[in-house]
Length: 281
Figure 1 (spheres, helix red, strand yellow):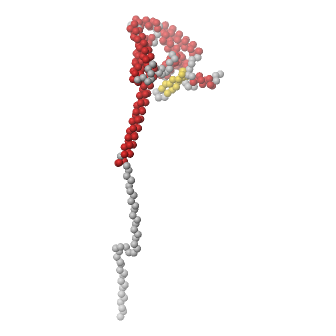
Figure 2 (tube, rainbow, N blue to C red):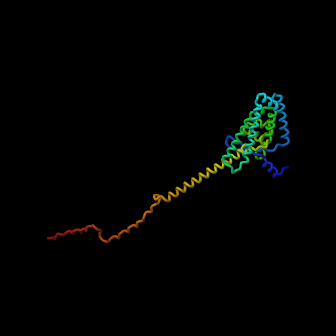
Figure 3 (cartoon, rainbow, N blue to C red):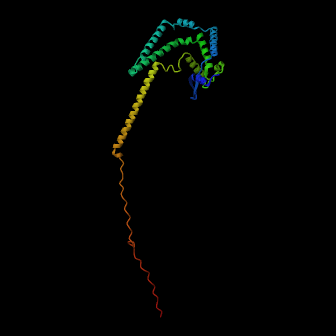
């Protein structure tokens, strides 16, 4: 029985890739190592599809090459141009990788763009042949083997398989998951990383240049903002209109003491006359 520590090491050593859903959720998947039985059945699947393709009248790779030559696609002109592009790409890659980091930024960028252009041209030329070659017996059989392995080794985080059987993979409604999983397994079998196109020498150089320019722009913007803030502070401290006037406080007058007696302007009231009594006779 495997120890818990060994199981954890196996799970942690798996290759991981992600897939974004329509709801903008990121799902994580893992590629586990195939078992011996998985490999044997994948090879059997290769032989089965290869023989079926022969019976169905598909061409082998050598036969397809002869057809492309007869059609004028694989002629001497194509071969010479392909060799020229490969040679130029190798030379420009050597030049780019030997440029010092202290070299002029525009020279490094120009060299990286030249390499990227040549790599794209090489890809387009290969596609002229890879398209027809994809329908040969060998390629059809190899696709079947990759599909079978994909159905056996794609897992979720806890180690559970996405598909219990090969037929479950073929009946999967989530086409995006099937295509992504198969592509990741194909890269894994070829020893390539998921981001191999982003880690080519020219892409690394272009990323470094773009990041350096962004850092300079942000630094310049920050300096400009600090300078503007300092100027506003200086203007505020020297502007007379901005100086706040402090009002003088005038002490309030004390109320005068009231004089005793009759208020000024008051009239003296006369006492009422007493009625005279008549003298009796």
